[in-house]
Image (cartoon, rainbow, N blue to C red; front, side, top):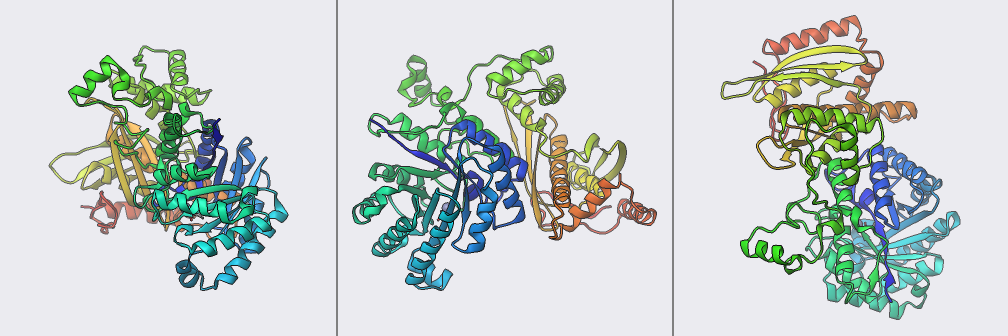
Length: 567
Ligand code: KIV
Ligand code: ZN
């Protein structure tokens, strides 16, 4: 008989709080829908006290994703717990997750409290959470570096106060499998009440042991595992969902545990997350990496051709990687594209299918063979997570050994076209400068990455950017056979996200100040780009200044691409 393991997904909370992984409300909801399709049991949607954005995103997920339990994180304070509760109140199955640190290191240096105070905080927080909902999880932060006697007392107190799940985090990825199993066993032996709760684990990957530690804990009696898609999370990340699920599945001969995860949705979830965050999965990543099922060595290829199982312990199909290579070309119709995308796990309805078809035809004109990876990139490129306030109408850029490069950009906003020309030390820098001068945003490029989604010289290039606008970071992504076009549209995607947020905050009439540029650009877009005549003149003069060799734009801190002094 196999025991059912609860999969608690914290991609949208612990994963999202790691650098470069932040998501906006629409992205969180889209990812939450995919986690639902993936079959996770619990979605931890965020930490509502952390920011207004986080509160709203958790609230939206709670309203819209109905099957899984929706959890929200809170420290032990009343404010945190009440705010978390307000965020998840609309959920069909809400869970409050409260935590406090139990290691002396954290208690003395971070919290500046005593052990007794931590015990009191635990009890009060769990009781308060229970006054809102019957589903309450308590986490003993830094449990693996806590004194085991004290950890047992805290866990006993939490269960006594009404916690229904007790989570034992390895917050800094410090433990090893043998030690972690011992901790889990000790808790079960010494805290009798713990059998009335679900024992959970939450492992970080600082030593690369998060999955091994989680599996060891399951063998020792844990029945909930906390994890993230692609293993994203603080520092080296959290235990990777796909690795845990597939380890339990592939080794079910010696691990009598089952999850509710639909393994065929794993690859799609991984792709969607990396498309949203712009954080690519390393090629040799277990289960979902590009090379996870590639056999390079001749001896391996020979073995696999004769009998797949010689070098494959699971099939690509079992995690949703389709190997069927029905090739589409520019004569393929909308219906064939729709069917192929549905086979790949992307059943698109109109107008998304129309948008994907338009992109598909553009790309089919430039590319001989269209691979599955190309189609997936086209779908992600066409996903409109924010309204396109500014839309790329055309882009012409020059590049080469003769500097500077030039770019001419035409953007459309609310039915009107605006043109700008700029120069830079490369075509991308020039295009970004031209976009800035039309939108009024001054973006600081924090990160820029590009990858070929498939093979061949005519492969589609997928560009991801992280751009800072007045202290707020937005991600942008686009794909094209022309990498300058992809770079410019990825940047514009980030601009439109900034505007989307500004508008959403305006609509919510949030008293918090907006990021300056977001507010300014929102005003411009809202007023049908009605810049006051004086301001318009100034802006025109600035552009003229720039074209004539105006002020030097920021250099160095911009990441790989510098916006240089305009000649
Ligand atoms: O790593 C950790 O300790 C956490 C807790 C808040 C569960 O993320
Ligand atoms: Zn964590």
